[in-house]
Image 1: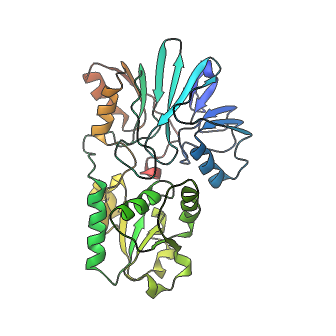
Image 2 (image 1 turned 90 degrees about the vertical axis):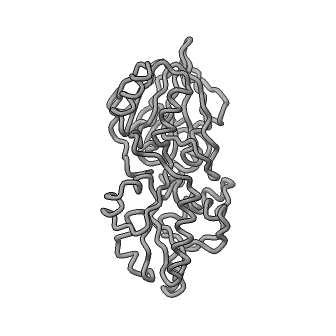
Image 3 (image 1 turned 180 degrees about the vertical axis):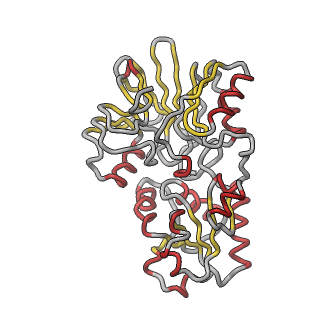
Length: 327
């Protein structure tokens, strides 16, 4: 552990560093993991494309594409990226040095998501896992149930628009894709802050269906329609232009009723891009790792569980990673 973040000495590389470093390996494009200003960045092509959209093409002095499953070297370490299932381009990082195999999970989920490559289990000796939803209370329902709940509400309130708060990278695109998978073929209306990343997803081959900017629409034309905006826009002046919106929150935190009330959400949708308790604990066991390191999130419960299962476990208490950003 260093102030910059998790450091692999024989690779002379940092994993998702929180400040600019000479060499960074990035798991995915969310802003708390992917920051600009590094000298050299290794990541999947999709993550590099996303960083370019968010920070400009000069976000690093040099970049190196690491396709899934293709090993490269960093110093004396063999580095291979494997799918994490979190968002488009997200990766677990396998570090092989001598006879040791360490996997840094980054953020991950194991449920199906049509917008990104599914999680791949990677056997290892040490598994470094996230713990965003690392408490037994977090057990997430099927996303189809939550989409059906949204569409039923839309049918009940045909003159109100449904305003969904969803993060710009990953959650927005997943909602669009899941709506299409459930047969919803009408246009979906987007806050301006979401449009560029949706265009980037389309450019990288992820079909999202027809989307339109809210700014181009008259108030009455949005009656009965679905609108997606960043979570912060739900209570913002921007939302006043919408016709009597039903406020919806798409997040794993919506399982906690107090969170929904705090954000004035009328229709909570429990949709998370992180592994829940069952998948976190199953993954720890299935990797075969004898040692578990737990990074950001609910570290104590996972460390206790791993210890009860006979694994050596420790909390890293990484700073600089936001629990609410990707949800």
